[in-house]
Length: 430
Image (cartoon, rainbow, N blue to C red; front, side):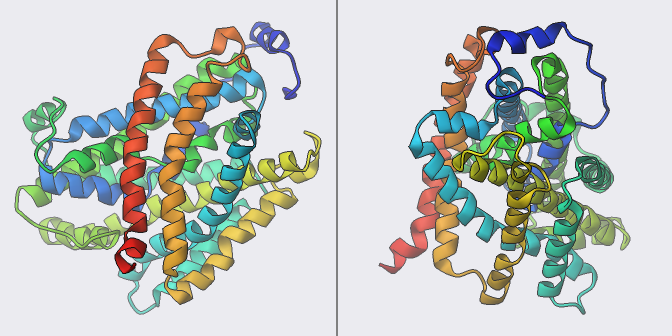
């Protein structure tokens, strides 16, 4: 495995070594499945219900943006043999401090949100059970699956969940018999009145935040760790986000065909997916409701597993690097002390939030930090991938810089808007 102190020349020499073996399922599918959660499906559904197919182009653009961002994170890891946090650390103490605060506060609040999201479709299926018990069960099951750090097992479970999502979500879109002419028309960029924030959210906000940066860690877990894996990584990443794009477009089709055309509205938040199950059942038969709810659960639970594994790997790297531990220190690895410590942090303290209904101060802190992570990722990738830290061959091309620059600008705009929303309860009460 590439050591972080290995020279660029030695890493480039890897290109002359044996050809890598191709594998069907890769880390790209994991990062894409983790990023497409219930909240993303709702955002796309609402966009379709309000504007029909008009914003389809923005959803497609969002797929391209995620491919560029994740490819940058993967290219950094393969070209340098260093983790993304190691790269951030090289930018100065500010990046390490920000990331350290972010990963602790974000994990506390996200744990509760993820467990609740996974529990919601189960409560709809089994209303006699209280949501909190399903939420706790989802957290415990997710922790158990990733506890030992066995990447193959984790990847296999994710692949099964993606299969369930494909059958249910894409199946729901196919049942609506979408208008192909209108779909093609939706690929023409237009921004109807009142849609600017929906457009930005579809293009930049769907498909993950911190888990995009976890891609490099999953590459290492997979055994893809040197430049010779670059082509495989790029194909893996592109194909995975094409699949995630299919999910996003499918939900937009459902929103446009079932809701926009009939003037129906759904509940805000992830409760809207439960309402959608009822709409599908009324239109296509009672069997559709439980099938769609299972797909809703698969989408939510895949995010739980991805975060429980991927962000725990990032936390272990953060702590080990901060403490100056050797690269081969077992506490740095998947299944190690720090990895498991963060799994516990994601699982048990957030259960208190399920009882206390998420105290407003923590929600505000989570929203404020979360709104600033994507611009942080885009800007730092722009800096790192044009620096001498990366061998010349693997630095950004001019077109990639243009795309990353536009993406960074878009995420800054989105971040400011989300920051204002996060602080609204405090400012409103002042």
